[in-house]
Length: 593
Image (cartoon, rainbow, N blue to C red):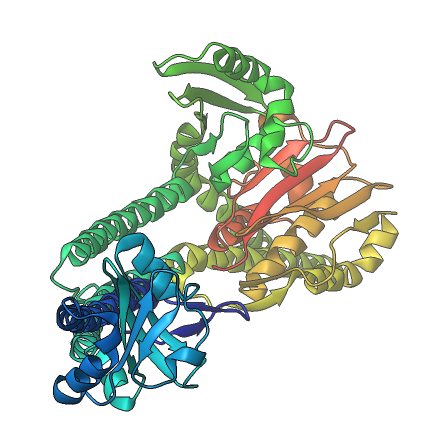
């Protein structure tokens, strides 16, 4: 059995098994004490009645001796009888019916007071017999046991003094007391063993409940006592084991589902009937921001987007008229040069799922693969052709002026630099495509990285009168490759400086953060891009104005490098036009990749 007192939030309590044991034993002890007291009193009364019967027999024999004698010879006859037959300690008293003492073998009867008021005399007059236990004799000054018997002419009273012998005779027999005590101890021992086994089962069950509540490891092989409580405990442990296995299986399936959602090629979001987020993947957030005119700080903000109004009305309508059947609705949304299919499914408990599919994406990927080889060949052909043409002119004209030859050589050198940059960017993209998992990762502070880039391009910004508003809070840190993260923000900055125009503003912010991602916005207030070009900005070698791009020295791979670097860091990126003018890139970066 466990310890009686146990701490519990600075208090102490008695364990259940001890409480049960003490309660039952207390009741049994009280019962035993009552039984002993009752039996002791009965034993004592029996001894008193037995002594009274003996004295009554003595009274009867005395009266038989006196019945046929005259009053004048009573004293002599009584003295002779008492001397021959009666115990020397026995006191005999003859009292008339008026209470006057006629004879007393221990005292002077003539000088004794009237005995009519003595309890044993009153009982004898009333019932014919009477006794009084341990009353102090006023004549002898010694306590006596009195027994009186009423006869026709008188009352005969016998009395014995309270000596040790008499006390011993009147005391109850102690054997039954010892017997009761022994039985009580034996029952206490056996009940202690029983409650100890019961307490062990309860303690095991309590420990199991505590560990289960705290989700701590539990020994499933514990042995419980072989009784009803033990069987119940074993059943509870088995049920818990099955529930735990089911929970672990569900957790594994949940992780599979989450992984599937995060890697899915469609945006998926699951919500409660109150439109609270349960689970959304990164692509859902990305597509929602593309459809929305402003960046969404919370996923639930999609229900405020005007393009989602029909979906929102459908959800509200179904919540007012619940049905056991699943309800579906699908709409098409054209926004920022993309076509999205949005489907809503409402389940029986009024929770619902929204999926967003970019139906133009697959066709774009096929077209990109087809054009990639053509673009590479075309982009390489241009500088090579220029270099070849200038060198051919120099070789075929021996009399070419020195100044003209120098000009042609300078142009060859510029084209070779452009070719080198082009080959470098192609190499970077190839390395990201083929060995993304081998790129070294480290802790990178995005806030510091962006601040350094702004300082590096400060002269170019000043020449074009461009203001950079860096709203990034300090210590935005994630695990990634510094060079690739640098290329993301540097290429976006270079792209804005090259093509957005003059007297503009560039806004850089992290507008949202959740458990896994940072959500960034890189926007300018420049000339923007026509909607038909938005979907192709991240294509390799794609240029909106090809002549202007080549004149400014671009390779056509900057934004492609940005997209690949974002993908390597577990994110997605999209471009859209701002309502107030200009181009905005919205992208995510995973905190841990």
